[in-house]
Amino acid sequence: MKIAIWGTKKEAIYLYNQIKSDGKNRVVCFVDNNKNICDPLIDNKPIYSIDKLKKMYPDQIDTVILALRNGYSIACILKQLKYSNIKNIGLLKPLAYDYNEKICLEENNAHVIWTNMLRMPILPYLQVVLIKTCNLNCKGCTHFANLFNKRLDNDNTYPIQKLKEDLRKVSENMEIFRLRLLGGEPLLYPELKEAIASSRECFPNADIRVVTNGLLLMKASEELFQCLNHYNIGLDISLYQPTMRIKQELVNLLQRNSVKYHFEGMSNTEGIERFEKNIRTEGVNNPEKAMSICHGKQCLTLLHGRLYKCPFEALSYKFYQYFNQNIDYRNDGYNINKDTIDWTDFLDKVYMCPVEACKHCSEKIEFFDWSTTCSPEYSDWTV
Ligand code: SF4
Ligand code: SF4
Image (tube, rainbow, N blue to C red):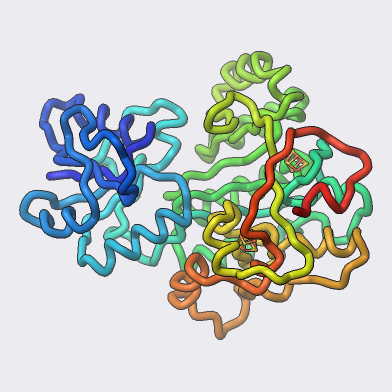
């Protein structure tokens, strides 16, 4: 193998060091689309552009491994590589880095998914909203959980039978690279263990996580931990201030139960100290521009039989309802149970094209300090 590692961040360096440790010197270079990288070398290996990569393939480089998490970036790069005719492409699962596991390239799909070995096209990222309510009331929650907490709907949970059918349907048409089960707070979802089992059965190769604020873990059952371990599914724990306060207790608990976990903070701080907002309800924005800067575009969301571009498209109806506006994008998601759905077309378009809802997102993002609130206000989300 003559390998190019796509990416220059911590996951890429981790992969590089793991491959390097066998002494075979298989890594030829790194690749990055970012032209502003100041240092052109990592451990004396060059960082090349895709144009250079294309020229070196297949004589000097025969394998490209993407060490990235962002679903949107992965989708864009896979498209670039497809048009370049580069075939031997691997996707490094973030779990390798998050759990500090020894990477074995030869062991199929354990740490690296090889796209040319898959029966179906791969979707880089999918999140499933199991339940819309939460035990925290974060101000400006991007899933509007604090509004769902206030006025309960009949359809606050994803019915387990429907969820299983929908996961099955997706799995018959696509592979998933990263699958995240979330909410609201997924530990409030009554059938969480069944959802975990079904996710793994449908997506045996995926890096699957349950995303939680962690506060209910101290009361979680041993059966839940056993279930996570049995299906090789880890926890992504968001480090909000209340979670920070019990972090060490959580570590002790999870280590005692051999559960894989990963704490999520911000890039420059350990905890989550800031949230962002960008809604402009007038709906006058340029959707392309809004989409180009938003973080939501990588968060493809499955809810009640539809695939949405982002949680805003799926859940913002609650925001508009709560503040007495008649806007609802729930019918805009792809209905996965319609026979007419063209999955190839879906994969081509879903990351690249804005949706109607994008016109409600501003080209400007504002940040504010994280806090909780029992009195949500319109301005908690709007700029
Ligand atoms: S913990 Fe997450 S889902 Fe719950 S209110 Fe806060 S941001 Fe929303
Ligand atoms: S609606 Fe469009 S611009 Fe707004 S968060 Fe979703 S993808 Fe981004």
